[in-house]
Image (tube, rainbow over the protein chains, first blue to last red):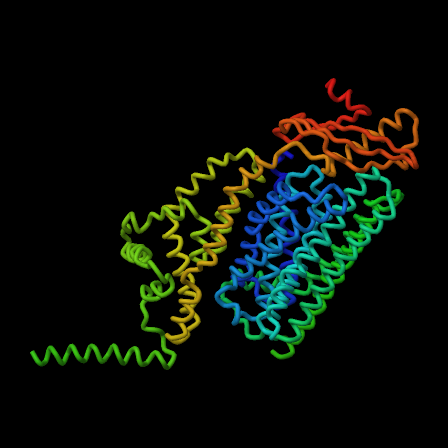
Length: 327
Length: 272
């Protein structure tokens, strides 16, 4: 891909999904757009990719679990991907919040964890999308699966860290802060790698095992999203934010107002639901294959994302109506 | 003489009165320079020197402006000073530019390191004053102001450690990639996929049904000086199975392009 315009477009396509997902959670937790801590976390999360890559390369070179499909998938999914990525995201969160771990507001801690994950996902997405000849397909598929997947893992991590700081069994919650995201991330990648190996072994034939792996992948992503939203609901209902004052800088106030407007989220939600047609088109007259089932899964993700964004639009509309009533 | 003493003591009392009145929420008596010292924390002399030079529109001492730590370890220093976004920008901006404009030389990016060495301290002072102004505009009392200045500013050893880890990773990455850039193994999914596809194509060309073909048990036979990998695997159709051999060799190592060749007999490989 030599054309600068194409590369620039691909670059924007690579970074926009993670920004939208971050803003979604920021608006849901009523975090202001210009919150420094959130953007610091986003940047540090992106930087966490470097030590994660080194760890992954070293594991790939020096750890050998044999040639069994499932052992290979486990090594690549868990040892090379899930553990280093979630570990360094966790380190990035601690780096941002270290000095005020006990005093940081739970909602801010939650959004810091999500911001770290979105930053990581953003940087990772650039390398998957920009240098790929089929960048449009990769960008669209990753925007409904991998990018929100990272954010969901971050949400689970943030929730566990919050519980660790404010409960009696804090050692258990600290362990959960790493174990849950590693398990979810590992499961996500495990099923993907297993499908690749099964596809290679059975030379494109769509076996029952392959179907099961694809189905488990779809279930994993849906479960991640569900857990993240349960954590979000729990935090939002337990802790009101109230009193976050405007910084007084005009342009940030404008961005904040736009990001919290229900119309924006209606548009994003509508685009997601319309985007489902992109995957459905590929399903028409397609033979049974792993790709077809993946596209069915991506179509389902797209609808679920659309529902989430439209729900946020409704919640924002109610919040703004209440503010207008109180005024 | 006594009058002069009285005048002096009146001056002292006026200052004390001024400080006492701060507790009532009046604007703090702290000067901007004092606030800068609190914000910067340890080793504030150089930054205060730059601040004073800016106020008097003169040039600060070269050793105050020049910071060789920023030149050598930019990300770690910016993270240490809690300028996280600037540290991230310094780290990621060259990568992003080269991703979009591959023709850009990495050497041209290195020129930025020299600029940072000269501008790093001034940049920090600018950032600190911006933060101080933001806090001053909130009209809080002196004690809280000092507390928030110290909290917002200061240093972060954890940040420095994280920044150092990232820099170490960046330095180690090319060496590790050189070490791991070897010919793909027999267990590599793409090698297995290629082997399966070659067999399928061969069978189709011969008019055979390849729908139930499966390939498994990829094993490494021999790996010669990182330029050739020999594998054996089992090709199975229904109840029949046969051991087949594959040779993985580089076509263009610089771009990571390799080829897989299939043989039914080991002796055929040695003829290549």
